[in-house]
Amino acid sequence: MRVGIYGGTFSPVHNGHVAAAKAFMEQMWLDILYVIPTGVTPHKDMQGDATAADRLEMCRLAFEGIEGVIVSDLEMRREGKSYTVDTLRQLYDPEGRLFLLMGTDMLMTLDKWREPDEIFRLCYPVYVRRETDGDMDGAIVEKISSYKQKYGKVVRRIVTPAIELSSTDVRSAVAEGFPIEGAVPPAVATYIRDRGLYRNA
Image (cartoon, rainbow, N blue to C red; front, side, top):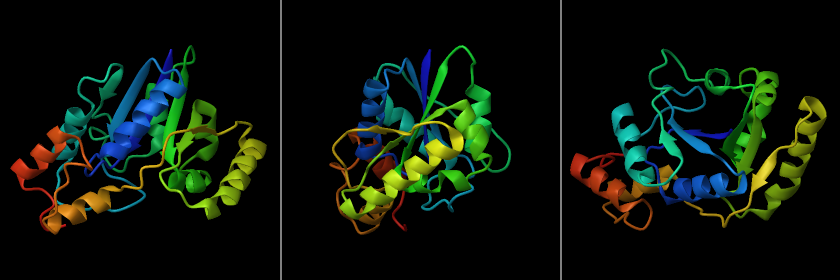
């Protein structure tokens, strides 16, 4: 069984997340993809006024109907801060393979996460470029090479057109009164509007 994990704050989930998830499933030949909104993240403060329940529901709406995707509240049910290594331990099966998807920013700091040795032991890290900054190319190659040397695994790349869009962009658009229909799935746009989310982002 080939199982993917795609975590994040998802506040809100947007079309870039959905595109990355689909490419991840296709290019890594995944049987199942767990989309896991973070509970309390150790990396950054939660922004916006969406609750954990809001973020979970928006993910369910965004990925509804995509075969093989399971939106999970696994990290939200965990007490304290959510660490990737704990999620990997919970989902690890020695008979299968775990693949962990991350963006470029997370790739560049992966060795600073909690128990990076264990992360590399439990899964195969995979990254996706969500930016088109060519100046990053050399730094990425160098980082991946250092991971191969230190942890003995190659970090793979998902090849998909870069969607330069962030949750911060979406929250700012809502706060400024701009439409977000082209940035997030239609059901998510409706949910944000109906719940009055991010108006003070």
